View 1 (cartoon, rainbow, N blue to C red):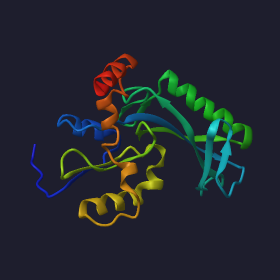
View 2 (tube, one colour):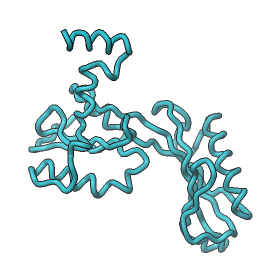
View 3 (cartoon, one colour):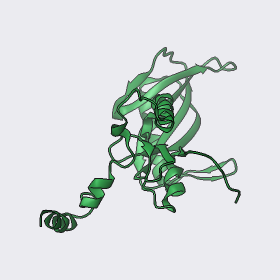
Length: 212
């Protein structure tokens, strides 16, 4: 493995961030959340995003040049269960598990209620890196030159540019546009030391020690 030399380092690898920093004792309290995507075509024309039942959303993606049908992407369903669950990939072959099949079939059923002549083009999924409080981890870790920029959940595209700017401002020691304390990767550390992330019994014992 080759070495990388630099003044400062940023880990922004989504669900892979935790594995990268865990072996050097850096906490990255995030979990992978599987989000499903269904791309389909329909003769129904829609010019803006549409909210469906069960917090699903449909967004127009363009028009099929050959068939003339409108192309849409549906998303919104999410599953908590770890990074090893669900769909396996073998080259271009997709093996859809029972849970995945049920989720994708549910999406298709909801879509067919509002769109005519639905034809599924693609079924996909992705892992969203989610922090416990649904606020990204942006800032310095316990190492002065190691920073995190991860844990954006389903808002990665929305917050990407602003997160990058905030992280750069912190690294360069500039005045930040936002209060960085809200995104501090160490914001969970005090709670862990005090036992709030452990069991109730553990918290009670540590609280007694704190008050002794």
